[in-house]
Image (tube, rainbow, N blue to C red; front, side):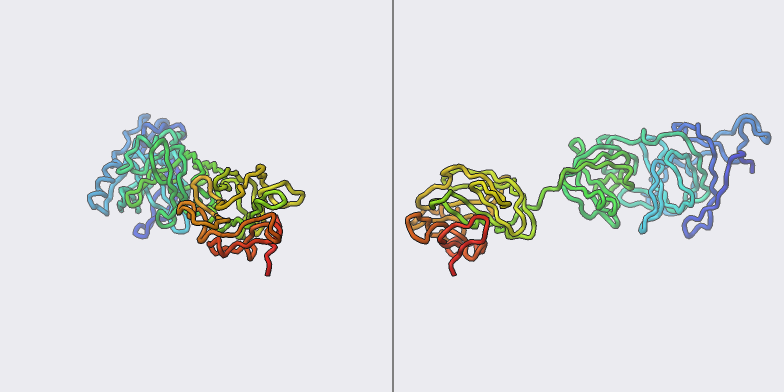
Length: 430
């Protein structure tokens, strides 16, 4: 056999049913990728003293489309020489997944997955040919899992120019060609298939699922406030779910806004104390009953038959906030407009999540006469008949007793106390 002077043969162990493969790497960096043809390793080339000045035509071979058609027909074992193809992507070895590379013979595809235990790395842009022996197909993805006689020729071709626009791909039937896009993540990631997670995305109105190895997805932490710039992915499907798949962190850039805090459950923050008619300034006290700090910015204090007060600041775990006059200590304070709390029968307050109108806590008080059902529904349980009377000794504020206790019934949760204790435990009488 006549070889180019710079041709190297390397032994390579492949599938269990094949002992070895001959690897030939032809150093020819100026080759173009649009002419996916080979000078055969044993073909005389120009300047070779052992042959003529003109190389013989490249050997014929089987197209990728033909191999895909054979696999789709149920053919499993073949002995076919693949016509020259370009390596478009190399998937690194993982603990539960062997090395694989992807090949195409044209920019629009189709593409083939080749599983092999290559000892020497392939590089995207390499031109290859080999003899295929074992075919399989699943979810429309055709795989060659046993090859021999692999020949590799480096080229200067940039395979990224073959990366396609997602809107030009038939995602129901497409093969694993390259794809490039920007997208918005629309939800949290979840299970895709063994070893992989997926996150829902939208790119220019097209809804897909971005698939990645689980470790990569967890590292990136994709969620609904992220955008992704995918430089290089392959078309994939699992159970007919279109999934552009990224295998390497270098192939994707991620930008995320801070994840929104989890919604506050009803009763997590309680209206703990109210002083609406005492000799001192009006105030409402809140208490955080949880072990987590809570951002108050998404919440409003709604005054029944009154105004709405937008809250702000971060309420520390098991801490008080006062909606009222400014303070000199470190208790969180939100200003309360003058005479904001109505004085009279059947009044109340509600702490509401602004975006959804979800009620976190509510209290209806000073109810001594029958009231309309609609008003009754604004509180929790039975309305409290108690009232804050500045002229009645020992009745200067309404407070939860015990302090920050909550049974979801205003009648049992509130008591009148001799004085308000904003920013401190309520002065409940024993």
